[in-house]
Image (cartoon, rainbow, N blue to C red; front, side):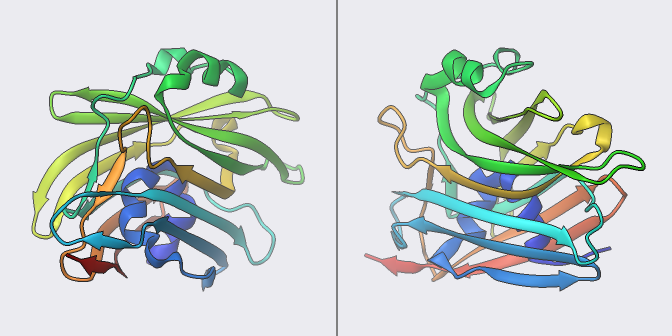
Length: 257
């Protein structure tokens, strides 16, 4: 089992950024690169404002980025599922924001997806996927990332993350992120992201940057308090090759009021 916080920051934050970012991207730290076996990961991120009320939920804008590669240049494994327990100080607010359905995003390019669900757009960024077919040199393909509100119902919130990869491969990838309340000690939110295969399992996300808006149609998708100067998240990532990455992350925040 590969255990390190940056495994999920560099691979999973793309998929579940709305929750993990609250606890892992705090403080605007400079980029950090680590090695886990043959795997090299670089992660960076931050949110604003950095000073948060002790008692009142403060809307935040979130930015994260990451890169993953194998030291020997080989193709890295693809992540298929991310499970997160997030600090109860952070909250996700999707009620009141226009919604989008998964069916509106399937088999669409970036322009069509944005046109179909523009009012529900809560974030965007860029991603690079590396595709490695048998007996061929790996190739990199780029895509814009669009994050849409899927709505809230029965105590469950949903987000859809859309990416469309063009030449030399072509196709849309829509990841579903399910968010529910989760009382477990310090944690208060559970998020589960199911990541579809890219080109039948031959593709892996290797680089990304993503920004979640602070204000969407007068509403704030993400907010947090800072009660004791720290925020915490537990992360479990499951990879295509059977590897599991599990850790807890603590980051500082500045309480005020």
